[in-house]
Length: 387
Image 1: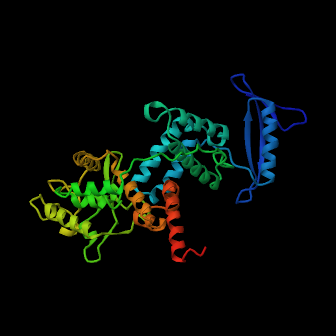
Image 2 (image 1 turned 180 degrees about the horizontal axis):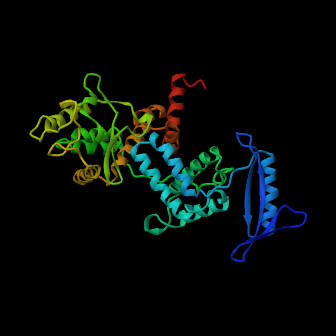
């Protein structure tokens, strides 16, 4: 290998052993912690690239904005972020985030993160929107938005750690999420369903669903969580599917850990389920905490219910009741709609459901507008029409 310095320039013309020509320069950096001089040697295919990079890097060093070159890829940055954040997540959240990032990795995972540009993130958004999803027709706007959000969080950490200068995903606008219409029952239909399941061994569980509790919350509820005297169920555990496995853990969010007030009909239904399962002729469930520490929802052998089976059982009961088929989660929507239609304040509905009030306002805007009219009407009546 031979080298030759260009006249009037610190750029060196280098001939490699293969005969290829490269252009190289040395960049003076700030002294290290030990006070010793530091330099970096950078090599380029063309002289023009070397000259442009040298001018850029000198400015960065002068402004103390220089970042050491790195071979780290987007995959490396995602791994670092996941390793730091995973201890704060529930198993279900970790699984969902890792799943959402698989598509990101497939498109840009092997790219050097320092070369990642806004255009690459825009291309990622386009690819995700046009491929995958149901029937390969593209992923939903919500799925794409989640993927971009997670990538942005990982790049924020990379900026903080000095791996990259800026988060190039921050300026990429996510797709607009259109609130999907959901199916729900009227209050009368909800009442019809509950009346039809009175003879079912899990009638208490269906009444808990009829109060708007999530499937995982119902399946994670224990008899020890029921305060019979106060008429309260303390939501402190959820059983959810994570990658095909059922995992028990904390409820979905901090606001999901709440006390759900039980009316007399729900307490009656729970007593029936207790008699038909816990005190009946089922195989004893070997759980710590004694009899009251056992799950409310168990199968005929006294074992925990699989979430998929619980949903299938619900659909079978709906068919017997002669009601329109809806998802089990849509019962929760039905409860929220019925409460808002009855004039229950949004913040109270949100607290009861363990929901975010701001999200509730957005999802049920058509119902909250009607509630607003009811509220104004009540105010006018209260003040005697003197407005």
